[in-house]
Image 1 (cartoon, rainbow, N blue to C red):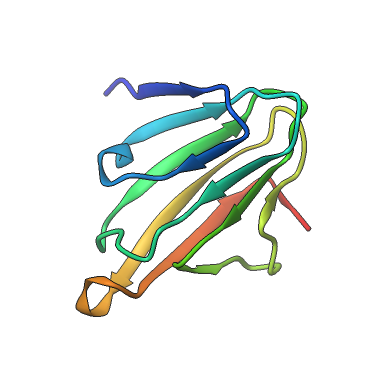
Image 2 (cartoon, rainbow, N blue to C red):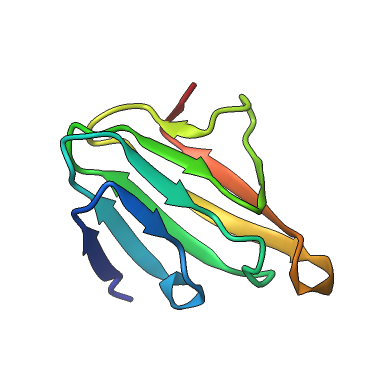
Length: 103
């Protein structure tokens, strides 16, 4: 199985339902804000990578859980994933952020 890669070069990005199964690389040299909407469906999964110097901050309407309460990528070449485990009513996504994360 080959990953569908999406390259993002800007400083902002909002995750969309069609990103499920994708590997999204963020390559900007400046800080990047990724919005995780509260409308993601249970079962949504995507991987991400900080390909440039700009640290990724994950924020938005979804509840974002991380083992260490991190909301950012750890640094250039960090890699991880987002997984939506539930969404009661379609507007309260609970998402797990895993991988090489930082505070």
